[in-house]
Length: 368
Image (cartoon, rainbow, N blue to C red):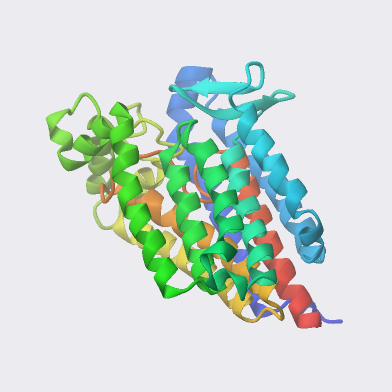
């Protein structure tokens, strides 16, 4: 069997895009963090080493999952979902949970820091793909939608009390879009969309810090040394980059001016160093990856495979758009990593594993 027969063009392109994004991510993580890592940890490669470990773990997971029949995941959907819920609960348990900047979003297992909400996104996709594929007629009714809504609502509740409104919004959008492609009626689509529109301002009003972020989004210059500081510094970076950027590794904002330069706001460093055209190329790579993931879903031989591959694409698309919208000041500031690029071993490993599942859908669909 030749190489071309073993792997389709779509699979080759998807793998190439993922590795290009992760390699580029390692380069940008080093560029954005070398100064702060040296200043805080006396090791300029501190964040790079963690990122490389995540990429290696993710590559292994992607290869293994691409070789396994994705239908096997159906058998373990409740176990995977239960593990995600337990991990989300553990962030509040002393001795396991790690608090940072007033939020409980990480757990420490055997000296390794894990962010459970990253795992929850894909466990939700798996559950929804299973449920919607098996009950595609029932979801025309509200009662048929209840199991999916209960599971999604439970995960959203556990994440919002961490607190992490950004991940909660990501989970909500993923649920909505998967229900739509799964066959939810227009009436229920309009109803749930309306509920979401109302829920966002309510959640903002419930927490004073979210309200401050909203005011900072409306007028960041009103609090240039407070809530508006991060957005202003992000816009400085993007503006300083111009069309072609100041050059790779030449960012000025990474010298402790822009908080979280290596994680949530790494897109600003990319814009500063590589300019508007560099950002366009990166966005084109994400668009291509999501396009081919949806292509895999549309070519799947069963409803479960279609929803699973499209669900992975939806997570990547939603999180990418939310991250870029925050960095460019299009929506109020909130913490959400850029897939495959931002510093975070859990994030890059889980996203690569998700792509591995989509590749499994492609491979086994071609064999059927």
